[in-house]
Image (cartoon, rainbow, N blue to C red; front, side):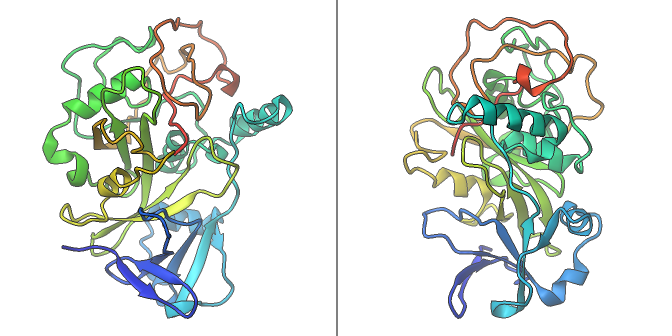
Length: 327
């Protein structure tokens, strides 16, 4: 069994990838919560794979050095270059309007797990905020047609159109590709989905894109946004790919049972799946639905939504996507 390796430095405690080249500061929580700084062994930096999102972001200045000199174990710290912004009912109307304008112009600054994952998967090419980008990797079509509040009545496994369709995608994915067996490649995405939550107010899903897979294939590194939290830097996380490890993506989020955590309703089953870019974009991607959720809002079934007319893409018409809740 291959898991993360815990080591103590002069002042801090770290979790290392099995190959010893990447590390995060340890958390005092039950889960490997991750930090806004990714530590990389100084003598490995030149060997980072050039076809990875991590390499591209480092060389484009989207991930920058957070430490001038090596710290414990010869580690150099790196951080995402800008804080993310949220749209929330906790903020003033003036602040929300300003953040909406910023998100419209720079979708990769939106503090939302799915929207940020989509930007990472597409290499930060400009994506209109309401465009669904990801679909199931292991399903070509759904066995029956589900309507997402009058938005979609097709059997394409597009993720993020509504909670009901996300659940259907997760439940129809072959179990040999789910939970601890869900292992994305670089540029692909983890998604853990809460099943059968009905009208229970809960976190419907969490999604994050893999920015690097270590050379030995044993560790996936992600960069994750979290909706409904204060404006912040996204967090790096390390997940092992061995399905027998305690440190897989699925096991990590199933441990998160604290109040406000992803699995705060442990009686509700959760399924982890792998998503990929759904290119080419569908012709009807500019159709919106009227959702009862703000960006980052908590999920409830919406039975009274109506299809809106086609209009210019704008975050003020948000969202077509089913957004995650605070976790």
